[in-house]
Length: 342
Image (tube, rainbow, N blue to C red; front, side, top):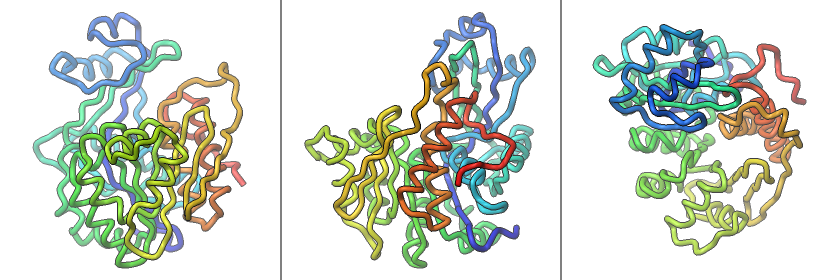
C-alpha cells in the first residue's frame, strides 16, 4: 500500500459494520428496544440482524468510534492519508466493511479472526430516533502480534500521527502501548480519546499507563468528569479538569493538549497551563437530524488540520465544522463532495 508520504494518520480500535434502516415501531417492540437508545446485543437480539437485512432496505457504513474519526479525517485530508486497524471475522460482513471503508478513502488492515464473526451494529431508525444494538464479536479479539506483521508494521513506520480510541483499552492495551512507545521513540504524535465515562472508571490502570505518552487527549464533559473522579481531582469544573489532565506527567518534550467537547456548549482546549474556550457553530434545533458520531467527527476534523500543521484555533474550527455537518445527516456520514472548509 502506497500512502501519502506527507500525511499518514494511523488509527486503531474496534471496527463495526453499521447496518441501518428505517423500521417500523413494531420491530422495536418485538425486541424490547427503546426508540432512542444504545445497548449491547444479548441472546434476545440474535435474530434481529438477519431480520433487518431480510425485511428492510439497509445501508452499510464503516463504524466504531475511531473508525468514524478516521473516515472524518480522510474527508478533509488528501487521498491515501489514513490507515485503520482492528479485528474482523472471516465472513461476508468483513468484505462489506472493507468496501464501505474504502469508499470513504480509508485504507484498512484488519486482523481476521477465524472463529468470531465481524462486529456489527443494528441501527434502527424511527422518525428522528435511532436505536442502536451492538454485537462486538470479533471487534473484541484484536491481538498485538498483528501489529508486528511486516505488512502492518510498515504502515506504522510510515505513519506520523497515531490515534487510539479509548474503547480499545477494553480489548488490547499492549497494542496501544506498542504504538505509543513507537511514537515516543520516533518523535511522532500520539493521540487518545477517553471515549466513554466507564473507561476512566473501570479501565484506570491501562489508561494511566498510556496517558504519559499522549500528546493530545480528547473527551467530552462526562468523560472528563469521570477521569477527574477516578483520579481524585476533587473538581467539577471542566476547565480545571482539562488543565489538570494536561499537566499530568508526560514523556517526551512536547506539551500535552487536552480537548474537551461539551455538546452544544463551548469546547475547552488546555495546554501549557492555559485554557481557551471555543464556541460551537450555531444551529437551529430543527436542523439537527442525528447527533450520533458528532464527537467522532469533531476529532477527525481537528486531527486533519493538526496533521496539516494548522494552529489550534483552526483545528478546533475544523472539528466544529465537521460535527456541524454530521448532526444534519443521518448517522456519521459525510457528503460525497469535497470539503469546503478553508
